[in-house]
Image (cartoon, rainbow, N blue to C red):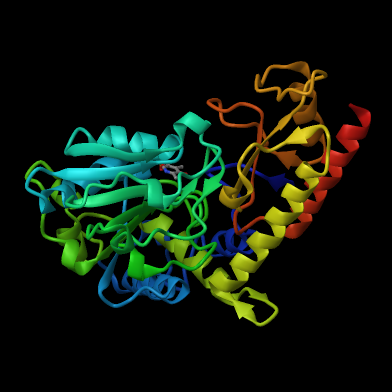
Length: 380
Ligand SMILES: *Cc1c(COP(=O)(O)O)cnc(C)c1O
């Protein structure tokens, strides 16, 4: 029996080959007589796992040498506090600008306000987060510790397809991005980024593990209230081992990195192959939604996410049925489940449906969903 297709926004589907390999190595990793969960983080075996994971991640994302890669913990929401604790001290008034394009950057702005002087430079809220305000209209302050944005808004399905060039906008501050839900699905222009962070559970591995990739010159400004194991400079000096790191999660992430490096799409490999697949999957699903009279996605085409696609069924009056408990929504989800199409229910703050198409989702899963959309529309 093939596994069902899992459209969860996170924790999300993993590449099946990675789960198989982890299962095979569960009791004995490479003949050392113990599983990865059981080994000392200071031992040679785990040292090898950590070093390879970092090396492979650097290769996949072409991370320049003057950036540190940190394997931290706490999830992206903990780092909404830990980032300002590390970077706000770069500015005498701890000034932080945030561009709010959805629920996650809104949360980041609220949390950062506990540690710094936060100014919302632009917000997509008046448009109900269906578009990204044009960078030329952002009210950036010139002199701030950093500018924060969420490069893929998982809940509202809005993605930056180009990162802003802050210098061209008259702002010399480093850009911080929360890339939790699209990391490794596209290349990153590091010349425009000072710090990138994200939880692992969307596109990388088990929940808890949190990636932080930070330009070296930004380190060394942690506020005294910052817990020392979350002081990015200390964490960098300790090679992510300021305390016991999430060893098993790092191991699984490492297997995902190896899987990604082995993926091919035409003459593309790794992240370039993932990007080609992501574009193909997203185009297929958006085309099916746009081409129907039952389904609707309200996001402006230029800002549509390749990873998270929220959509609504329409009611008999043609209006989107946002209420998850509407009988048509309930019937849709029940029928999907019966076909092995799992976790399509939208986020509670938006309602409707959401299909998350991360790296582990094969095109066949999207085809199965598109076929179901068509069949359900015929019967509706
Ligand atoms: C899932 C998600 C988060 C929350 O991550 P946690 O690990 O639950 O803290 C934050 N930001 C984005 C963009 C996300 O997709």
